[in-house]
Amino acid sequence: MKEQLKRYGISLIASFGIFAILSFYLFLRRGYYDLFIANKALAGTAFVLLAFVLLVGLLARYFVRFDGWLIYRKEIGIVAFVFALAHGVVSFLIPQFNLFSWAALANVNLWLGGLALLILLFLTVISGNWAIQKFGVQKWWFFQQWGARLALILVLYHVFLMKYGGWADWFIHGGSKTLARPYLPPLSLFSFLPAIFVVVVRLGEFFGPKIGKVIFFASLSLLAAAYLISFLWWLV
Image 1 (cartoon, rainbow, N blue to C red):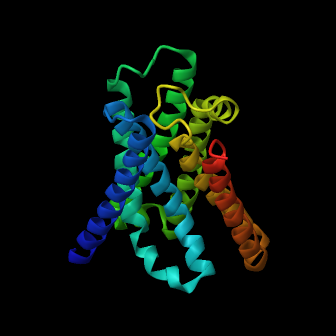
Image 2 (cartoon, one colour; image 1 turned 90 degrees about the vertical axis):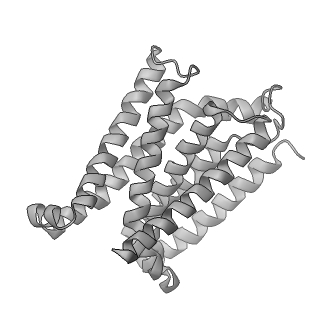
Image 3 (tube, one colour; image 1 turned 135 degrees about the horizontal axis):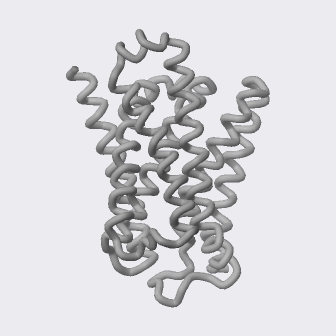
């Protein structure tokens, strides 16, 4: 129990650290901070945590030094669920969220689908031995692994539907004049790109460890290049 509490503590500290970094970036870009902005940081944190949960197993298979991170997957996954749930609740409370538009309804359905999967994963994780005895170890692991992957894909699609227009507009016209620093890229883009990286490298597993590693390093290089290009887009 003491060791588990320690893992939860470390997971929470890391999660709030990510939330603080994302919040600070949003504050720099917009010049102010309110519940609407905090909600964006909540969503970004949940997104990053879920992507990490899916990535860490692959890292441990490719690189021995990441083996020690595996023990945190359960706790980080549960914290990701809490942040996703908080994002959903706050989204219904803030006036900027227009629930009655068709685009919003479509995105709500996608968000609810992803959240439903996260809830099921959350329940099977906290149920522990009962779920394993009920479904068997193989089925339990299958549900955990593919449920998390499907949840990430749903969230990716949700983010893409909501944000792709804003990303294109930023690259073409730049940020809004109401922003304090319009040259800074949208935060949602920087949450989306590493999640795409996770999907690509997980697909690379199917080609075996050697090719998988090549895909991992190539994708990591492309991710770094995408970040660099985005940051320099309106500065050069």
